[in-house]
Image 1 (cartoon, rainbow, N blue to C red):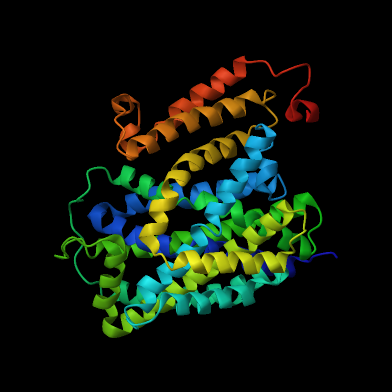
Image 2 (cartoon, rainbow, N blue to C red):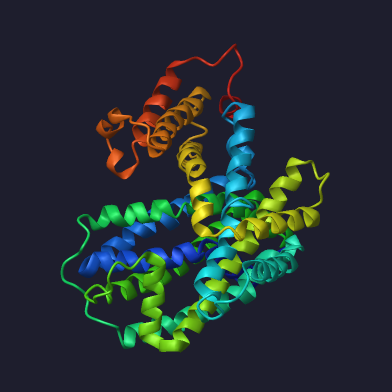
Length: 436
């Protein structure tokens, strides 16, 4: 089917809106206001750095994965095959039923439901939340359209009410001095810690399949549509993060005590809109978490269904993911993060090394570069996790960027360089060399 310019623009907007909504979960709602509060008058600098490390890395991941038809294992194919399979599976478990999906439900419950209905059972809300997710996800071809056409406009509309009020009648003056020492570093770290690269890993497969079903059968056309949709998503994130950072900056001179990130969002909303603000925040959190949960559930079900070679169908897998997510969501956000953080802190940098190297696939003939970079990142990240459990490893503090937990960059670079010096086993050339 030949797509005309009008239908192409509509598809770009719908897909772009869906990508925006899936990336913009409740975690993304709470980081920018807190960053604005600690940045004061330098809030825009902090926001830009956050934008680069969050949306920048996420979109870079989408663009990298388009080249591999959206599948995680295809992007990791330059690693040893069993290692790639394990890494892809662990990543999808974390971004799916073990952490990110149940966290959307738990966040909605703790930030949106409990302030209004303190006696509500987490099991009851979990059943209602995941019941809605199942109904809206069970048809894979409709997922992107449901999010892009209906849920994203509703999310943007509710956010707009908060933003307009906060801009016209700010809750306070913006402090002339930042309470954090290095605003740029704070912004970059906050963006890195959202780990939205995992979200990009998950949703790209769904986006690619949706674009195919819309009639874009040529790889060049798909890349064009998804690239333009990514621009739409980035613009949406830019304006929303900017507004949230500004709202946080207007609270920088208020005496709020030891408020945490989630508490700051609640406080700002209440100060701007009183009791109505609590209701509005509940709606914002619900839409933000629901859109993310739908996107991640669809992509997780697609991944694990393919992993079983479709022996477990997509609809059945959606049901399994929802059921597991509902059970885990009842333990609460803190328990989930405590359980999953060690795994995330190890595999996230490894995934990032492979994404960055994938842009140079045609130039790198030796697969050992990919393996060496992954091993380098794995070693230092594992040591960091061990140190986090109380084991004394004093040498770690002398490594560059250890203070911001990015010392893996050095070891991954060294590992990749060492890998380049190790010839590949036998006479077999790498896939990149064969394709060149």
